[in-house]
Amino acid sequence: MQKQVLNYRIIIEPEKMGKKLVYNAYCPTLGLADYADSIDQAIKNIRSLIKFHIECLLKDGIDVPQENTFEELIMSTKVSIESSGQNYQVMVG
Image (cartoon, rainbow, N blue to C red):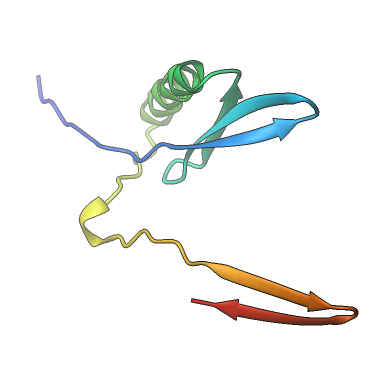
């Protein structure tokens, strides 16, 4: 039996839905998303979805996408917006 270990990024983001806070979970490489009322439940949900998705790909004979985290650059940038009437000044950096 051959064993292959794959690693996938999971991104968790809070979102306000009305008065309620939920947590969105994304796996960008596989194009999957789900949400839950807690971070732990969001992680559990997305892991279950990843398992199901990969099982379906394997069953259908489709290559399982692999993530190469060693070649990625993940960053954020700050954007400032100043307004004066109808005039806006946007600064990035």
